[in-house]
Length: 502
Ligand code: HEM
Image 1 (cartoon, helix red, strand yellow):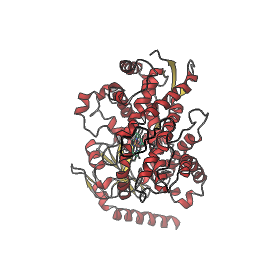
Image 2 (cartoon, rainbow, N blue to C red):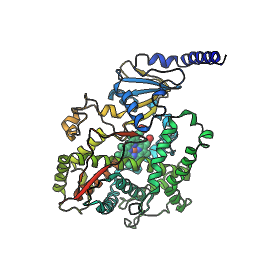
Image 3 (cartoon, rainbow, N blue to C red):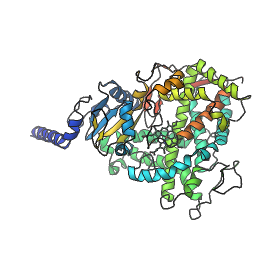
Image 4 (cartoon, protein in one colour):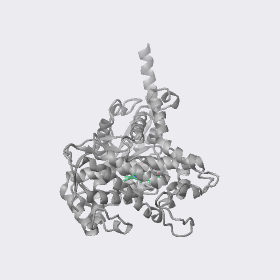
C-alpha cells in the first residue's frame, strides 16, 4: 500500500514538475546535460562527495558536455552552465542577470557581493569612488611595508630543505595590509604564531558550501540546531571581530572622527585638496550618505570587503609563487625585469614603477588564467535573456559562468594546459575575445577591488622576488584543487626559498 502511494506521489510530482517548468524545459531542450532523476534531478552527482570531488564533477560537467550551454536540474533549481565568451558577455552585461545565485545565500556576508540588484545598484554607485586611483595610489607604501615584514618573517625558512606553506605567510600579509587600508588599524597578525581569523574564515566558507549542497539543512531553524550551525555561529563572531571592534571605537555621531593610519598621516584633513595620506575605507564610508551608509551597512561592507579582498588576493599570489617555483626560467625573466628598475632589494616600489612591470603583468595574468581562484561564479536570471544566437536563457535559472572552461579552451589559448605568459603578448591579446579572460569578472557587477588587487600583487611580488628564489617539488600536471568559495590547491602551497643576490 505504502509503495503504491509512493509511486502515485512520484508520478504526480513528476507531472507537476513538467507543468510548472514547461517553458524552461522547452527553452533548454537542445542543451546537453546529465541524466536527471525525479525530484532530485542530477543532485546524485554531488551528494555525499567531498569538495575536491565536487569540483571535478562540476568542471567535468561544464567542460565536457557537447553543446556550448549545458543544463542540469538540482531538485527544483535549473542550473545553466555557460562557457562561450559571446554568451558570457551578454549575461554579464544584462540587467536581468545582475542578481547573484542562491548558492551565495549561506555566506557569512550581507554586503555588495550578495545584495539583490536594486539595493546593490544604490550601494555600488556610492562605493565606486572609494576605489579610485587617487585613493589606491596611497596604499602602495602600506603594501611595501607589509610585504617587507612578511619577507623578514620568512627568513626563518632560509636554508631549510623541508618545504613550507607559502600561503600561511601570504594570507597574513594580505590580511595585515587589509586591516591597515580598510580599517585603518595596525595589527600583529604577521608576528603571532597562529591566526584564529584565518582558520575561522577558511572553515566558514567550507561550511557555507557544504550547506548549499544539502537542501535539508537550508532552513535556519534546522541548521541552527545542527553542530555545523553552532560552529558557523561561533566562527562568524571570530570572522567579524576586528570590524566590530573598530566600529565600536568609531564615533558615529561625528562621522569624521575616526582613527588615522599611524605612520602615514599628515595634518591635511581637507577633502577638496589632493589626498596625500592613505585614507582607510572606513574613513571614506563614513563620509557617504548616512541615510544609506548607516552603522549596520558600513559594518556589512567592511566585512564583505574583508571576505572578498583578502583571501582572493593572497591565494592568487600564492598560486603565482608556486607556479614560478615550478618554472624557474619565467621566475628569472621576471627578476631581470626587476633589475632594470631597481638597484637594490630594499628600494620601495613606487606607483610610477607599476606600468613598467610589463612582463610581471603578463605572468600574473597567466597565473590567473591557468589557476583562476574564481573558477566558477554564479548569477540568477530574472527574465528571459536572448543570448543572440537563437539560444534563450530561461527566467529564474541559476547561471554558472565557467571561467575555468573559458580559460582552458584551445580556441582562445594556444597551449591551454601550459603555463606560458606569452599567451598575454599584446599582439595576441588584442586578437582574443575580450570575454575569454575574466578572473575579476566583467560588466557592471565586476570586481570592485580589481585595481586594489593589481597594486597589491605587483608591489608584493616585486618585493618578494628581489629577496628570495623559490623552488618546489610540486608539478603542474599532478596538483589537484578543491572547490570552496575559492578554488584552491589541495594540500599546502609548498615551496623552499634561498636568498636572492640582487
Ligand atoms: C586577485 C584578487 C581578486 C580576484 C581574483 C577577485 C575576483 C572577483 C570576482 C570574480 C568577482 C565577481 C564574483 C561574482 O560575480 O560572483 C568579485 C567581486 C567582488 N570583489 Fe573581487 N577579486 C579580487 C580582489 C578583490 C579585492 C582586493 C576587493 C576589495 C578590496 C574585492 C572586492 C570585491 C567585491 C566587493 C565584489 C562584489 C562586487 C559587486 O557585486 O558589486 N575583490 N571579485
